[in-house]
Length: 152
Image 1 (cartoon, one colour):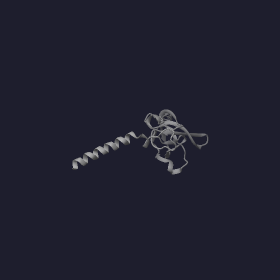
Image 2: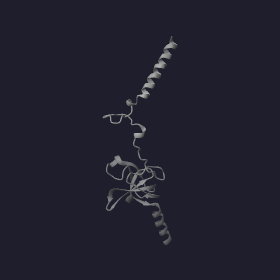
Image 3: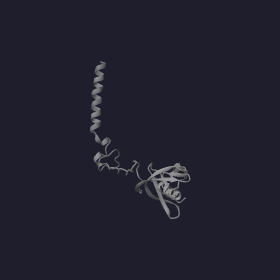
Image 4: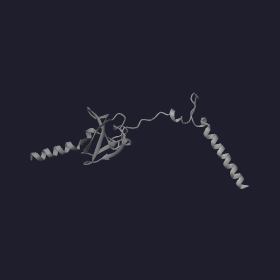
């Protein structure tokens, strides 16, 4: 008896599953049906653009201009931001670089003008932003030091 009940349940379950799989109106949008909800058929879905990747693989900001990656160094502690602006205060701080630390710049973007006539922010390889006026390129710092040593 138990075996008969198990077989009947299995048969009815299979039939219910087959009916649900063939009734597309339950979970797919029907064209022209006002207020239809659900997932559209695959061929009707709009593909999302793939974000542009930097050399390290982090996506660039929408308005960012890719650059040949270069190293920067900070002289004073500087906040890394989640967007190219200081607006939002501490909520937009993504980290900090302290004197002597370096980071790799992968893109430039126009943002908040922190100093007069300078609205350029750098996007780092981790996707965070740092104000360009707060850092120096590592190559520039090394060239300046060599020039001073050569004169002595």
